[in-house]
Amino acid sequence: MATVKVTDIVRRVEDVLQDTNIRWPRLELQNWINESYLAITLIRPDANAQSGNFTCAAGTRQVLTAEFPSALRLLDVTRNVAETSSKKVVRLVSRAVLDDQRPTWHAEPQTVDVQHYMFDPRQPKEFFVYPPASTSAELEVVYAAAPEMHSLTESELDPASGSSEVIHLDDIYMSPIVDWVLYRAYSKDAEYGSNEARAASYYQSFNASLGAKTQSDAAISPQDASAVT
Image (tube, rainbow, N blue to C red; front, side):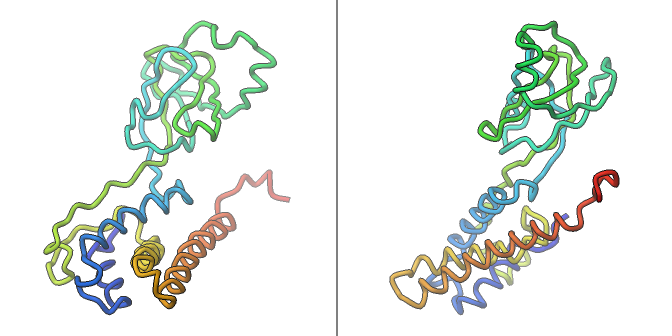
């Protein structure tokens, strides 16, 4: 749960810019905070990972946004959750394997119990299930969602306002958010050589922070003991 306030981000950015709502209006800074969420989730879809129960459409092809309009991409399908289902887990398989072994799998009888799902990163908001699902089938899914946007007024964005609205990502993303806002702020005056260099520096810091987190997560993530050599 986030605890960093939006006004905390504004204060940090204005301290670096040495500007107070003049050259860089706070409403503009808020737009860039909102923009940073999309930039972060583009690189780290798990930054706003959510889970929920997905009611299947009849057949094999499923569209994630039919149930979750803010979904950006599927991350996982974990299990069957319909009351009349077996509650069994659902496994990821290659569609090519299924196409080879059961060429008519799309036309097989529909069921409430899904066994496998298939995902193509070129269509991040869609997935296929096998056997074909009935409209009674329900799956627990994990997906990356677009964070909500802030719409605070100029007075609410004042660090002295006492606004309690917090950022819409975890606190660990505070630094990349600040870096992105500073990158966009200095890009506004990129015709000045020094500001162009500052913009590039903060953009590099933004990417480096997210890259370092990716490496750290990979190093400490839980692993299947049988896979460790």
